Length: 275
Image (cartoon, rainbow, N blue to C red; front, side, top):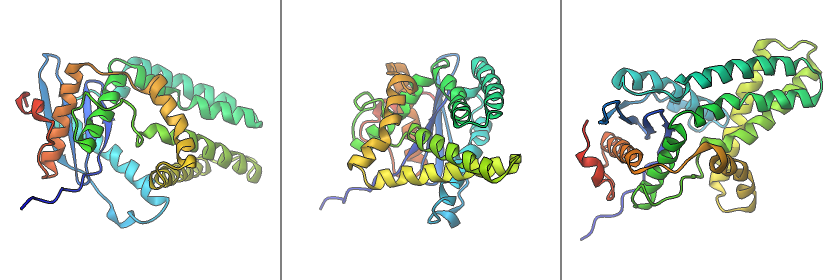
């Protein structure tokens, strides 16, 4: 008598400057390459607000907030983890983008708002190009896809259909539309009103993301994901080397162990790493 196949966990992740953070349904796990070349791992339970799991709009904002809350937990458990936005170039890009967006928003035209919206994503792009972040972003996609496909992390493509890059286009479009409506309704929109538009645009983008996943393979879904895949190919990811893939295998093993489902068939290389 054979065991029935276990349903695959839905995994997500975040590239670190020196490793990978993976989210499971109930836990997080991270693996990093330390300055002396060793691989260290850590894991723990993650905060979850399940009351909004079936509430459209709210669920996306809450899930993103939960992912942010995990970051200090990772740093506490794994001090060697380096966050991608700690790089000096990212800080400089953030200051420049903030100043530039403020100047563009003073214009009442749609072009000014569009320019400000596009400029606001510049820090994220600088984050992906700093150090090894783009390679570890590729590791994230390849390791998660390897688990989903019962393959080794070296085999899948470095682009993934659930990457957060697919949120960029709908979030930018909805934020631009909301800001233009707000300026028509209010002569001088307050920061609170602007924040509400930002939250609403995030909610809209996540719901569009979930719709595309439910209709995977449809023409509209492919069109929705096209800008995200373009970002991944051109800027967001780079092919990782074997040392970086080792870190990905270690992170994958750690999250599967934390979730209590054991290692994937192809994660044996992670068994020998230092922890």
